[in-house]
Image (tube, rainbow, N blue to C red; front, side):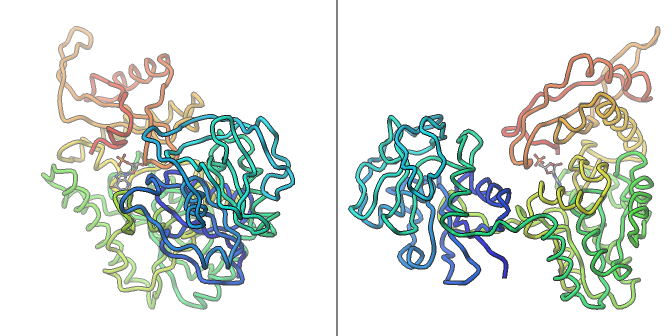
Length: 509
Ligand code: XMP
């Protein structure tokens, strides 16, 4: 079994960041809800307790019993996690109504301590907490202090129990990664052998065993996740992987043809299905965004199901689900546990009654890209912006017609090509054009026009949960605006969306 670190999640916004840092240090880790305390297992090398939006003194704050855990594993508590560790053994803390937030510098540091080896005095760390430990139990000892916080770090003397009041996982804690590495290597004795290549080997071997000579069907979307999932499966089972790529008529201009060619070039066994008319027919006169989503989703399921049943004896449905889709998240409104559903393909497995295989289930998005690149997939696929399942269907506000799709596809193509030509494509996280359901007055030559308005959107983000509008250069926006108005018949006005998420969303519908 693979060496694993378990991160118990108490609801901090930084929990996933801890996991990513641990993986960057080549150690496999998993995030579990705080109340799923792991039983003693050989392959679990250590446990990290995350921060939390709660104060340890809040009513309803998650306070699991950690006694067994401390006996069984080396434990590192971060912020709230640190306070919990110490509180259980009699630490005292003050609860401040003001949260201490931001930079601080380590003054005292105990270099002898295995967690603090190599950390420099004066090193910048990032604090974000309401409670502060004022008094440690006798069995504990401070290992780091800042000017304001005497117990910025502690350990339980001669035990593998450590706490940090600051967040080593954030970028602003300059030597945070070193501290985490100290924990993984000096304390947990991890061998740091988890790499993209080792992942590919392990996962291909696992898939060969799991799938044997069975046939698998997978829906390709043109996006990174389903493409990398397909490549991994292809390595494992070759021609037994049957891919289906559906043209729902709401893809980008020429995307169906180009992407299909790319997939065939990669050696995938892929069938392109032209279902444009069917989607447009079903969408006729639908205007409500959620209704449109439902129609597109259920039409996709029908088309996919029909196609999959043409493959004789297919037993498995493969999906490109990634780790953030399956982490059991801790609700900040209480210690209840909810599970996110995968909004892309919801309903498909139920309808198809097949066994599901998800080769990327344990990976973060950036890791999927690394794996894809180790599998020698073209950069074109790996650096593609996210594109919603319902495609242009939720970027044509209101009802959808073939003519509106044509207009938006042309606008979108000029915009995306423009971003690429000006080296801006890789600098934004996602970009797209939106066709607004209004006309505005314009003048072209000597003629008054009364035509469509399109909005351009580009955002920076890391996961789509929050996003900021991209500050694209004015010169670029000016050039694109005139290109669009001059070249796309039916558009006489271009606007740029300067809203961030929250409170706006990335898509307009
Ligand atoms: P929002 O608009 O919620 O978008 O800020 C966040 C990210 O999710 C994508 N998105 C979708 N993806 N089906 C999808 O597969 C959908 O219905 C859907 N709605 C939004 C959006 O493009 C962005 O990347």
